Amino acid sequence: MSEELFKKVVSHCKEYGFVFPSSEIYDGLGAVYDYGQNGVELKNNLRQYWWKSMVQMHENIVGLDAAIFMHPKVWKASGHIDGFSDPMIDNKDSKKRYRADNLLEDKIARYTKDGKSNKADELQKALDQALLDNDLSKLKSLIEEHEIACPISGTRNWTDVRQFNLMFSTEMGAMAEDADKIYLRPETAQGIFVNFLNVQKSGRMKIPFGIAQTGKAFRNEIIARQFIMRMREFEQMEMQFFVRPGEEMKWYEYWKETRMQWHYKLGFGKEKYRFHDHVKLAHYANAAVDIEFDFPFGFKEMEGIHSRTDFDLTQHQNLSGKKLQYFDADPEVNKNYVPYVVETSIGLDRLFLATLCASFIEEEVGEEGKKEMRTVLKLPAILAPVKVAVFPLTKKDGLPEVAKKIIDELKFDYNCFYEEKDAIGKRYRRQDAIGTPYCITVDHESLENQTVTIRYRDTMVQERIPISRIKEILAEEISWKKLLA
Ligand code: ATP
Image (tube, rainbow, N blue to C red; front, side, top):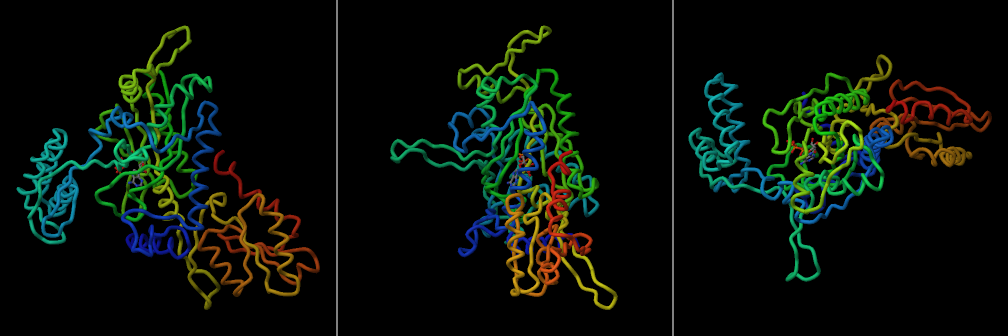
C-alpha cells in the first residue's frame, strides 16, 4: 500500500510539474532532479518557512549566503578530505557497486527475519567493530564468510573493499597547469564556521547567537535511491548556534524541542515524526539526534540536530592560524574562548518529499450515484504553489475581462493562475491536484451584481461573495503568522 502511495507521488510530481529527472531527454542523470513550475514554488515556500522561523523569529539569529566553492584547506580542517567516505565494493560480474556496510546490514535484516537472531547479533557486532577500526579487509571477509551474493549477478565474485570519498572535486584557474583542486561543498555548515568572526564582529553579536544558511550541497552518493530522498546535488538549510562551553546540552535540548514543534505546525500529524538518537557519534559530536519522518518507505532521517562541540572552530583556528574566539564580557566569565556549537541541519528536498507524501490525498467525492475520485494536495495555504485560480465561466461576454481585473488586483500579493479552457469541474480538479486553496469563478451574475463564486479546496464548498471581499477572505488563511505563531 505504502509502496503504491510512493509510486503515485513520484508520478504525480512529474505529471503536475513538481519534479522532473535531470536532463530527461538524455535519459536522466543518476540521482539528480529538476524542480518544475509548481515544484519551485513549493520549494521556495518551504525554504521561506524555515528562514522566517529561524531568522525573522529569533532576534539573535542572522543569515548568511556563503559561496559553494571554498578554500581546499577548509575540507582538510573539517575532516572531510580524510574521513568523509563510504566503504564500497564492486561485483566483478554485474559491475555493480555497493556500500559494503549496506550489504552486511541487509544480511543482518535477513537473519533477523529468518529468526536467526544470534547470527544477526554476532554479525552486527563484527560490523560495528570493523567500521570503528576502519578495517576494510575485515568488511570483505565478513561478506565472504556470510556468503553474500550480488543481487544482480547472483555471484560472490567481489573486488576488495575501498574507501570512496563522497566529495566532488574540480579545478580552479584558467590554465590546467596551475589548476588547483577544489571541492563542491558537501555541507553548508563550513561556510558558517569560517565566517563566524566576520558575522560576530560586524553584527556585534552576543553569545548565544546563531547563523543560518540555505544552499546547495553535493555528495557523490554511491547508491542513490528513493527519488529525491538521496540525491547527488541537494539543498540544505542549516543553522549553527554558538554557545558558552558547558551550556551546549541545554541548547541542544532547546533546539531538539523547537525543531520538532516547527515540524508539527505543518499539521500533518504528530505521529508522523519521531526522534532517533545516534549511538555512534561522528568525530565532532558529543550528542546527536535525527528527526525522522514516516515516509511511505518507512521512518527515515529528515533533519539532524548535533552538538558539535568546539571541534570545527578549533580545527579552523589551528589550520588557518587565525584566532576564532569570542570575548565574553559577562563579569562571571570575563575571558576569551572558542564557542561550542549546536547545529540544526535539514534537507530541503527531503522536507519537500515529506510534505508531498503527507498532503497527497485521494478521496471519493460527489453525491450518491455520482461518486468520483479526486486527488488533492492538502497543503497549508501559505505553502501552496498557486494561491488562487481565477476562471471566467465562458470565454466571451466580457467574463475574461472581469477575471483578469481580479488577478490584476491580487497578483502583487499572491501567485495567481488564470484559465478559461474546459468545464469548471475539470479546472477545479487540476487546481486540487496542485494544492490551490481557492478558486474564483466569474459568471454572468458577476456582471450584474459584482459577485463571484469562491470555492474552497478542502471542503469543496462554494460561496457567493462580493468581489470587494476577496482580498479579506484570502488574507485570513494565507498568512505566515498562521504557520509561525
Ligand atoms: P544520511 O544518513 O541519510 O546519508 P546524513 O546523516 O549523512 O544523512 P547529514 O550529513 O546530517 O545527513 O545532513 C543533514 C541533512 O541533509 C539530512 O538530515 C538530510 O535531510 C539532508 N541530506 C543529506 N544527504 C542528502 C542527500 N544525499 N540527498 C538529499 N538530502 C540529503
